[in-house]
Amino acid sequence: MSLFSVIPAFSRRAAIAVCLLCCGAASAQSPAPARQEIVHFGTFENDMMFDTDRYYTNGVQFSVKGSRDRRGRFVRGLTERACGPLGCEGSTLLTTQTNFGQLMYTPNDITVAAPQPLDRPWAGLLYVEQSYALLSPDRRTLTTLTAQAGVTGPASLAEDAQKLFHRMLDRPLPQGWHNQVGGSLAVMASAERRTAIDGLSATFGDDIQVNTAGYWRLAAGNIMSYAAGGLAVVVGKDLPDVSPPPPGIGNKLAPQRFGLTTCMVRWLQCTTFGVVESRVMARSIFLDGRLFHNDRKVKRRNFVTDLMVGMRLDFPDTRTASHGPWFVQLKVTRRSREFSATIPVPRHRMAAITLGTEF
Image (cartoon, rainbow, N blue to C red):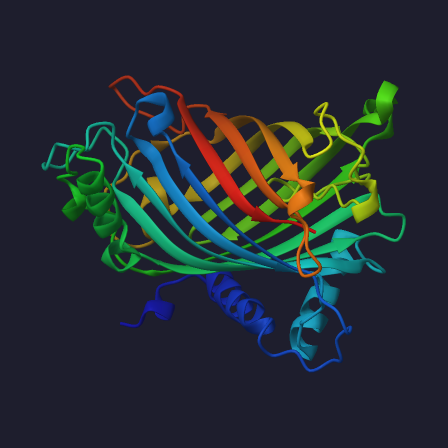
């Protein structure tokens, strides 16, 4: 029996759309502007800062973001049709972004080799992701369309990566990866709509801005299906009305304007942010296992909330003619309980560091 014969129709359509969108950047036929801004950055996210090694325990991602519209004719038509129900007709492409990454999930005690039916399943995902950010004519609403495709199970290399990392740091080796969620093609498509909120935004002395945006997101696929809503507050200088989610706060400043700084010194630009997001979960392969398979699973909670705070530091003196200033970004996330069991299930915390260049 083939894989596609057991995936529901909506997942098959999502898989086709994901593959086409992910390939769209490589199939562009339309003429491009003479100059393109390209950003490269990497993100490392882990819970070891809080002395834990459990649940969503590690994520790594390398990203390339550009301002040139490299969509092929078909993908352009697909994103334009998606804008009909989403209300983003007439929006212009702000950025395209390609992400390559790996996610890793484990139970609370990784030294147990036996199955742990009351704890979170072992799971890994190796993925590629393509997203398009579209800015409305009034520059106050940002719509982001994202497609993700990857593999779970041994092909995700999560077991190899965790064991290598633990050997390098002389930490206990994980023993239960043979219990992980099995291998499959994994896909997900999502749409996010982010709008500036005037009533919660203001400018204070020394040109310090507080910009607030509300957003919603819908995601569907055999990786995860959910609906989310949130509020994001960004504090900095010369900020756009609405910004992409971190990383990429996107305080785009002309080179001569880097004298505007929130950090008391000329050579440092600071931006801080806080986000609260709630999700109604319909499915997660990391908790429910694969469709139509007897994977390890737990009782998923349908309502999950994330609280995120962070700071981004730009170093304007590192700007050159070919790229913007280097930046480093720190983010801490506190996540509510994602599943229920007869054993205690604590909230989870993780920290992320991102390093790269921005516009």
